[in-house]
Image 1 (tube, rainbow, N blue to C red):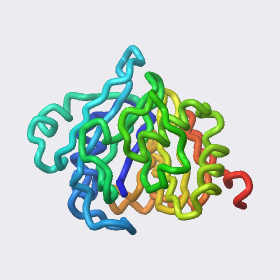
Image 2 (cartoon, rainbow, N blue to C red):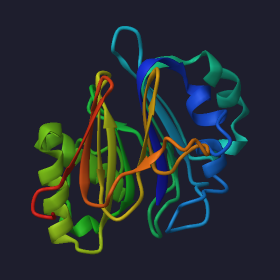
Image 3 (cartoon, one colour):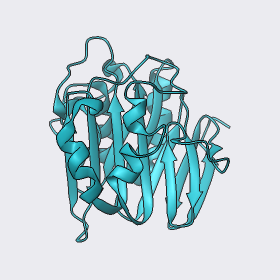
Image 4 (tube, one colour):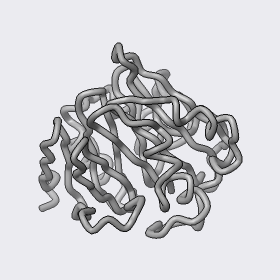
Length: 231
């Protein structure tokens, strides 16, 4: 399992989203509050964002986030309107390597998978960044098109009823997410919108997204709809 977070709004520092909150991804790497599967997320981390020209930038590691002093020193200087970040708890048998850490990318979208899926139901792809289930799933989602995210997740869920398929992706101007077997919450701030596996603080404005739903964030607008065939 993993924990992930997405930001869309006015330029915000990566540190303010990942490191500074009292229960942010940094803390969730060793003490998540709502994680149902696994006790911590010490098998890597990744941060992706779009720069001022819209180019995708990433920083990924196979080490625990809490031990990376270099990232902690640079994160306050990294600012973006769109951020996707994750900390990783590797499934049994999966490699622990930087390329296995989300977010994955097709050059436009940054995508994180919080969950587990049987690799046997996923097609092999030369575009997958790693052999882990999340990388294969990301390659399938990119190939199928982000506009079809809900349909792709539902189809994979039908092929693997035990799968957990929480997806979170951003392309610089939009966030898209699914809930399928794990938690996701939304926080509407004055300067933007946060989607996160679990709230990074105790702000009462956090709202939990129901299971098996699709979330789209466009500007300040947040749309939540039931995934097709699961209502």
